[in-house]
Image (cartoon, rainbow, N blue to C red; front, side, top):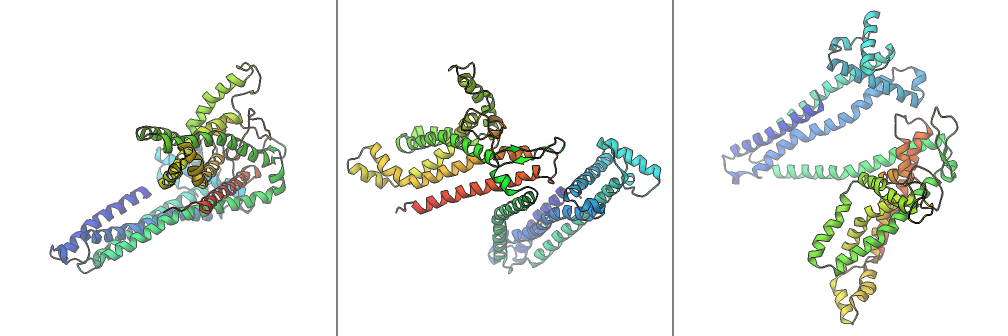
Length: 493
């Protein structure tokens, strides 16, 4: 039974349980709500949560653990020489899963019956016919050994899905039955429901923490694997980035320095654009703009924050790049060849800066507005003008928060990908010329993981080393920003 059907059945049982438990509680009180310990909705909610929560928790865990268990079981039947090499084992299991999917496709299209798809040991003629049919469905040849493993994988998956449906539905019905039996007018339903809701809230809050921990550990394990295959000194201190995948020949040179230089260089250009414009717009909106102007200008400015980054990338590729070429190119207005192509560091930096303007502006506007009006009034009372009050009172008081906003914008710029991929080019270069093509860490992570490569070579595992290095840099910027805000924040009453 598909997981979607199980989910729908559990939710339907939960809804029915809510109505039944609520009605039972009212009947036990003779229809008098005041005779109930808790409100009727708590009795229904208790039965509904009892039917749904344990079943859904088991469903989620089952969907995570079943593929792992089946992969482990099936891979134990692989030849020893393949099991000994993680990369070869991964490739072999990918073929097994692909053929298992091909069997399902052949059955769904009517090319095979269910019984024919389960042939593992039969006459040579039957096996050859099945190999040919599956090969046609997949568009490639299939050997008998891999087909047998795929059939084992498919059979184990079907068995696991069957037991998943039985166990989850049984748990849902039993949990509902227990909750329904407990329902009566003297049952303290409200404490049960509130404790259950508290546990759900704790579980929801734990998802983000556990996800972060999972991401960090996955990066760490794959990074350790990378450094076991490639020298750390060559990665951190080499100035050459030339990955060489199998089939191209040569050894890979995976130097980190040109990538981090391009990342920081493009981010600096973006901040040079975003910080003045964002800060000036925040000052205008918070100190000078009238309420009607602010009510229109602020939402329009923040519309920029809702534009997908791929749109900014297209804007850089199709508009900003050609425009810069018209000015700084060979046949440009200035008549000097500064740019040889539209993809350059300045192209990505300018567009990224435009993207960061609402980020800086919104945070700075909130910080400036948090400065008490009493400070402004005191400055005006001493004879200061509005601009003097802004320079000497408001901005110094808001400076820690503004610096924190700028550092947060910098971490956002460092992690940007699509604008760089489409606007900056793909050249890993150590250059101070903003009109040359450059690339960043995030762009190379994308390029190294694009395609069908397995995680069994330094050329693919390097993406994890790049990722954890970038993670440490952005984490450091965020920590510094929070430290500045907390250390120098002014407390007002």
